[in-house]
View (cartoon, rainbow, N blue to C red):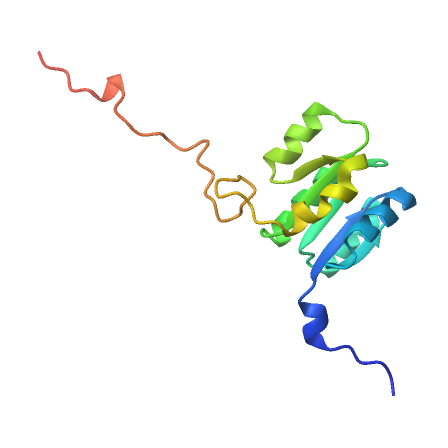
Length: 157
């Protein structure tokens, strides 16, 4: 007779995918959140992309630099399959452009050194009411603001 897991025990845990080429950093992230989430580790972009196709994770933690690839692509793939997924990108060498890009597509950013202390907050805390990473919030940045323009005014002669 084999070991049988109870469905309710494993289904309640958040599924986290870690995409990180450095084994020591992967273990550090895994150790920081293993008690509250079910973790899958991938060492490269291809393995992470394959895992994303097989399982829809509830959260993704990825390095911005995945050797020849970019972790932002994994964020886009994750959010396209599960728009409620929390995504965290990290790097030890900050690049302001990539950080802004990650935040604009709905990911959190953190320095690699601070990630073990901050990961639980990113994965489990409630989002602020007006946070743009909230998938239920409508993006109004490009919406027409309303009001009357000068061209709409009737001309009286």
